[in-house]
Amino acid sequence: MNNVVNLPPEDMPRQWYNALPDLPTPLQPPLDPETKKPVDPAKLAVIFPNSLIEQEMSPERFIDIPEEVLDIYGLWRPTPLVRARNLERAIGSKCKIFYKNESVSPAGSHKPNTSVPQAWYNKAEGVKRLATETGAGQWGTALAFASRMLGIECVVYMVKVSFEQKPYRQIMIRSYGGEIHPSPSDKTNTGRAVLARDPGCKGSLGLAISEAVEDAATREDTKYTLGSVLNHVLLHQSVTGLETLRQLAMIGEKADYVVGCVGGGSNFGGFMLPFLSRKLSGEDVTFVAAEPKACPTLTRGDYRYDYGDMARLTPLLKMHTLGHSFMPPPIHAGGLRYHGDAPILCNLVAEGLVQARAYFQTECFEAARLFMGVEGFLPAPETSHAIKAAIDLASEAKPGSTIVFLYSGHGLLDLGSYDAFLQGGLSNYALPQEDIEAALRDCPRI
Ligand SMILES: Cc1ncc(COP(=O)(O)O)c(C=O)c1O
Figure (spheres, helix red, strand yellow):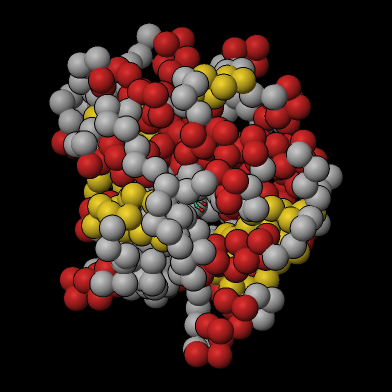
């Protein structure tokens, strides 16, 4: 029996889907960190190319994918949609479970869907060097890959805890020709200040973002790229949801549940947004976002304006947040350790259109081990959250329902995390309410 649904290459989407015009309530604008007024696009141009700033605010529902980006996508896209029949059998599921396998990209995750266009638009505007942060290393790898494909330089600030946990990610980034520093680093004022206060600091995504933004803002030849959160990143990631809609149509299926893990919200946002119009027109489809209990942004954060980074350099975004000074515990799903989330996704959570669930890391590793034992593939620790949610839903949903989740990346460079899990060395962290409240006290009052 064939479990794999392959989209013919000629049916790969040639346009991305932009959800901004379809949101039931308009998105609140990003605010200038100094004036607290809506940010002037000219100010953003210091760190982003104009074409991406336009996409960030575009009213167009569909945006053409440049030919050269389509050619590079063609190295691994369209990606397979797979019926996880063995998993269904193993858990006695009366529901159908499908996963969209984004781990087949050169970098091993969904991240190249946006690193390639971001590098392309930067290059088209004459940018020679890109600076970015990375959590688990997937985004840094994806940007190093895209920069190499397009012949530009790339520097990556990698959260120190992941830098130490995942040495092979660093090697992969350097093999693509990227430069990499553990964050906090001695390369920026922000990094040096943190190291002076706390030499043992293990870093956070918010801090690494500050370092990369500072790098880009202080050099003429460099712009900043973000691997998640922003509207244009979700736009580029919509290619996964658009392909999945076509693949489901090929086999006469309709998704009842659309599931993904959430760090900054780009894999889940890109996956579920193309299904949004079905929900808005009254169809019964449920969107489920899975996050770690150690960084429970959507389930326990406040919905308010906050900075995207620790040094308060980025615009203020209206989002669910745990506070920009929040230092998440060192869980192994490094890509899910972000204090905020994509404003588009937060808007939908606030509207009650997306539900969020939080899990402990050991129950996610258990789900990943079960998945690997029957489906064969070793998931990234981030992805294991989506697998856990899909397995839970299979026992809660009406028999016959169709559950589709985004398999956001492989875990072949996360074997140290699996080793810790297999040796029983992983702890679970449920955050005390006081810690969350303490970090939220630092949020600006708008
Ligand atoms: C494999 C994988 N999945 C998911 C994520 C979460 O990020 P986002 O929510 O932006 O998709 C990451 C982030 O690094 C990742 O590496």
